[in-house]
Length: 404
Image: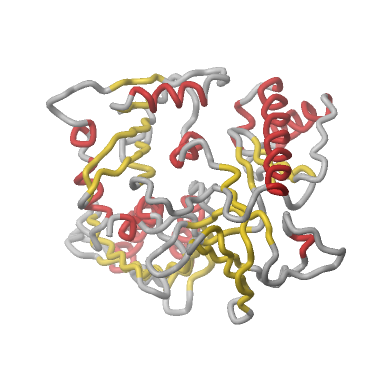
């Protein structure tokens, strides 16, 4: 398989069908991303914007419990930012006022409900486009660090030439803005700015509990993870999904190949072995080609990862054996963390090495692979006991929780 492929199809998981979306890599056809989207259950979902009423300030956790409607509550981390001017308030308060019970404000769902935890919300409102994102905080221009200097200069010059004014909003220029022409960027700028204006205006007149914005589709963020080129294939057995994606990507200068799967005897998810992929992604042990293995065990406090030599049988020195296995395991560990949607503190117990050069080589390999993850992943350090400490931002519930 020589092209990157996005697959969207329904697959039976436990007692109901879920929409499964998989991105397969260009190099070897392996899954790079694996997402499950269960049927709607009425719970708030990430990206939605609501008018909420503060039910109770919770000083112990430095947050607030916010009521949407009826019995539906969400948790809002405050993190010391208790000033009303930090939020998009519905209830008008005097300058310098602090948040208190009964206040009504706009908030955006950040993380789904997980087990006994409420959905988590954020007082910062973000409106993402394909090339830009608008936010209600940090006014001004913010450019992705992954943009090359000449790309950054070209994009900002295009906005400057058209006198594009962010006003009181923050504008984030995303990495793939380099792929868009000036006209497309300008059009998206004005479209997002007007949409965010309307959201804020609607929030001032809507009752608490009202959802005033829903993202186009939960899976739409995956379109940002694939290059829009003729080498990209988007395949689904749902014609309406393909039509929706065509509309979303209509302004791209290059178009991917859209493929409607119509084989009746063999479902699309079976065609690509997605059931087996899900089974592997929920197993603790991951086998490597060399015969070594990786054990991945999420706990309440952190994610534990252990590298074992297993069946590795090459006749090498102890140090070189450890180096070979660790360098093979490192990219697969980060791939598995991304696929399984693990987050928080991650502790990786590699096979001990003594040579400083080998340790440095391993750490650089981890940092290079972590930089490829769309979700912020940081390789912190290696402890004196040889444990690598890493963190990954929480965006989605772990895959194992999604199928419980």
